[in-house]
Length: 339
Ligand SMILES: NC(=O)C1=CN([C@@H]2O[C@H](COP(=O)(O)OP(=O)(O)OC[C@H]3O[C@@H](n4cnc5c(N)ncnc54)[C@H](O)[C@@H]3O)[C@@H](O)[C@H]2O)C=CC1
Ligand SMILES: NCC(=O)COP(=O)(O)O
Image 1 (cartoon, rainbow, N blue to C red):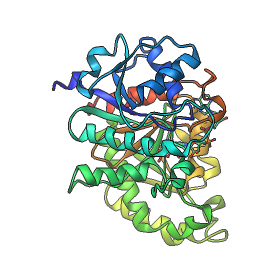
Image 2: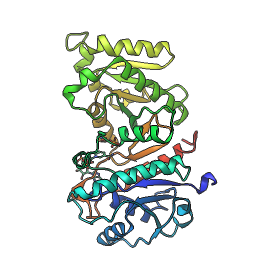
Image 3: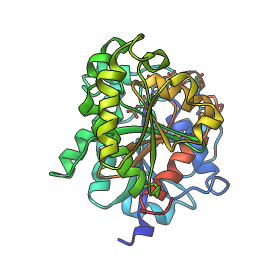
């Protein structure tokens, strides 16, 4: 199939959250938002009920992935996936967990089979999925697993990046308790994360010599060991290895002073030692237009930078901006060199 006829595959996400809302709102404003063709893998009846609740006139058409592009201009293409879902905005329904997972699996398989150009995920309720036996901390880790299922032998180490117009960040440790961070922060993990980040910024984002700025772990980047040892024993030695490999590795820098506008001019991506260290500045600066993109996979995956926002589901108040940015970025990344 010609590449321009292949659509993006969008997952259902948590049915009680705002995923359905932002998908419907984005499709409704597809021209103004400059959106590429996409299809949703979900229960069409459920999506129609959410559209009605939101007062949106969205014609829905059940399709196969290959036909999505040809109907996208006139109707929202849905590939029926999973079981029928109740429309209960804001109310967790444990029974929907299997459909949420099936939708993610099916979208990745579409990519592997050349039926989709990239995967865009809607937000999931992580705790709800854990309750149903889901063993991965989040999409990022689950997608790494699915990559090994569908691309045997391909290198698949998922790295989370939140990319906004004025700040891109990567957390080295991701979804773990803060108490576990020091033990999880190894030289190998820093090296692997940095190498994948540098490689993907070159090949996918078109930055020929990416500048990677690393946060310290401790206040003042450890103040020469007075406020913690990890900068001296783990981070700095890793950065020396990266520099010897030709990677422009800056730091470790005190995290509290590296996100103001002038400081941000000195690097292309900031690597934090734990989730909130870099996701707080990234979402504070660019909540509406930043995109969560998984590096290190053999396929393209993006997502809005926000979660399920239960309080907004079904109200029409959720903003589709970050989701729209995720769709545009996925389409651009699926065509290497386009960004
Ligand atoms: N990629 C994913 O699947 C993600 C899933 N989550 C999950 O989402 C759930 C809720 O997490 P929270 O930390 O509360 O974050 P959240 O992003 O759902 O909400 C944080 C705040 O931002 C607002 N907000 C979020 N999206 C918005 C939008 N599109 N338009 C307007 N306002 C918006 C919410 O109303 C709330 O005030 C958790 O279960 C978490 O695991 C969180 C982040 C990413
Ligand atoms: N805070 C970002 C986040 O939780 C995204 O996780 P993932 O589900 O994309 O792995």
